[in-house]
Length: 497
Ligand SMILES: Cc1cc2nc3c(=O)[nH]c(=O)nc-3n(C[C@H](O)[C@H](O)[C@H](O)COP(=O)(O)OP(=O)(O)OC[C@H]3O[C@@H](n4cnc5c(N)ncnc54)[C@H](O)[C@@H]3O)c2cc1C
Image (tube, rainbow, N blue to C red):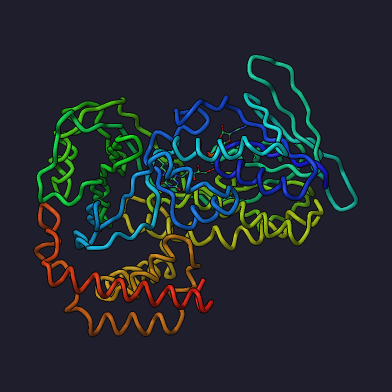
């Protein structure tokens, strides 16, 4: 393989191009947009005006592909948001407790800020040729002994009607949720893979704010970096969060489901937020002034393209990221999946770079990883009565079991940490079925109920429970420090990753 063409320069595309550059002579990245300067919004990723968080799995994968990524973000003053420490979280079970020690599990900044850091590291790689304002329109292919082989891509440059051709031995579709690969494949007489779809029926709304000059939160508000109120199945589809972003910006997000309208003016926002389970965000908003317009975005359907069992043979073509698997961003996994897919591509390239072997190997491995996020997202959507789709016995069992382990996690931090590792995509779902995990969950469920904090009344109070008393904070700090020390020792002894 000497030349690879990556179509689409979002998270998946940039990561894939970088990974490929280690294995082929030349990589060309085609991107429909002209990349903006800094973290400005661009048209090719319309969802970028909405709230985006990068999970630990995605952070690690991007860091492995773009060394220095996290440091660059920190040097640009990435805010440190931590649930329970400086950001209040109301889950379907109520308010989480206030913890004494921050646990950083995700990065919180605008999508533009994150992408711009990646682009700066990406631009520094001379092995990749970037063609901006180039829209791919189809595939080039030739027949071969056992099917077809993809030989290149057709594309148009902005402002020019002429169709151009670019040839290469591996074509990577990284054009995101609106990928046209389906039509491109049909145009060369290849049946596209079958699809599974599920509509979460959700609309997102987002608006940027800044604190008013001299505005100061009351002293007892420990949630200095934001508040998050989640949806409650089966019927309460309204969610909202107001979270600190880079550059003293704050992003207000509102989520409405089941065809409900999102507000489009100040009075509407006020009414929407005052109807939430807690008026907390409504009470915070007077401290802020808007610095942008309110934008809304109807979520696309969850969609799984079964490339891993595709019966057609098309050598030299792979698809990655949201072009293969789209799902409700409720758990913030999309960018991590896109970066994780590129990590998987890197592992596959180490095994083979042959264009006739790579696609099958890659699709198989990619599906194994993506299935975790897709199952978590779809089964959660199916908890809501408004979502139309078959609720199989296994989905119902999975949802019941997940609720049970979440409840056990409130009593036992070890269980909570393991569940979080699955949610953060650091571990596969199979982790929660390991015998030791199930036993410990059962024990926590049966015997540790007394450790649950906060109390039942605190959990549904209008405001989050206050900071813990001094003895409890001391106990928590000692316990967490011990647990961190033990994890560090286990890590050094190579007992864990
Ligand atoms: C409302 C909302 C909130 C979200 N929140 C989160 C979150 O909190 N955390 C998270 O991890 N994920 C979140 N996501 C998901 C995340 O945005 C996507 O999963 C992720 O961007 C997928 O990356 P990608 O590179 O595959 O596709 P994209 O990022 O969509 O990139 C596709 C690229 O391809 C280019 N392109 C498209 N067509 C062509 C063409 N024909 N020719 C050339 N270039 C083309 C586009 O310009 C774009 O640059 C959210 C999504 C939505 C809708």
